[in-house]
Image (cartoon, rainbow, N blue to C red):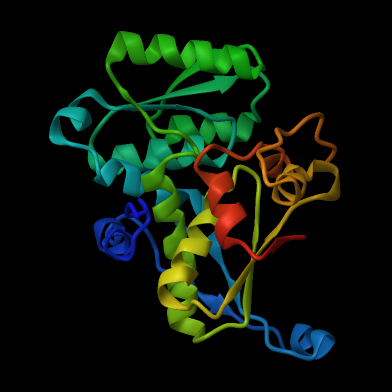
Length: 255
C-alpha cells in the first residue's frame, strides 16, 4: 500500500515550520454550556490567531515549504475572504510578494486588510471563472506559485495544527466539531486526530442551506455546491479534490 500524503512524520513537522509565524491560541471553557449539554466543552479560539482566523496556519505553512527559487517569485491566490488576508500577511512576514485576485464585490474591509498586509490586489468580475482566469494570467506573468485557499496539502496540514494544540491542551476528547466549507480545517483536524488521538471522532458542521459536504458524504462522491443559501459566506464553498477524500475516509459524520 502506498503511503498517504498526510502521514504522521509529515504532519508532526508542520507546527515547528510555522511556530514563529502563528499564535498558539487559547482553549476556553464555559460552565454554562457544560451544564446545558451535561458534558465538557472546549473552545479553540482561533479568532485570536494572527489576522483573526485559522487560515493563517495554512498560509504560513504553504509559504514555509516553498523552495528559495519559488519564494523569490512570490505567491498568488484568489479569495474574497480570510485566506486573502492570511496569504498576504504570511508572505509579508516571509519577505516575499503576494498577488491576490479579489472579486469586485469583495467586502471593503477585507480589501483594506489585504492592502494593509502588503498584498498586491488584482480585481476581477465576481464569478469563479473570472477569478480563475485572472489568477492564471497573474501566475503566467509573474511566475508566482499558486496557493489554493484549501485544496492544498500544506494548507490542510497547517490548518490541522489548531486541532493538534486543542488535543494537547484539553487532553483526549470524545469528539471534535469543526465547520466545513472547502474542507481544509476539518480535513486537517481529522489528520491531527488520526495521528494524536485516534479514539476522537471528528464531525463536520455546515449550514443546512449549503450542505454539499453532507450530500457528498452520503453519496460517497463529490457533489459540488449549487446555489448555497446561508449568511455564513465562508461556508458556501464546495469541497475540493483533496478535502473530500479526507471527509469521506476520516470524518465520522457531517452535521
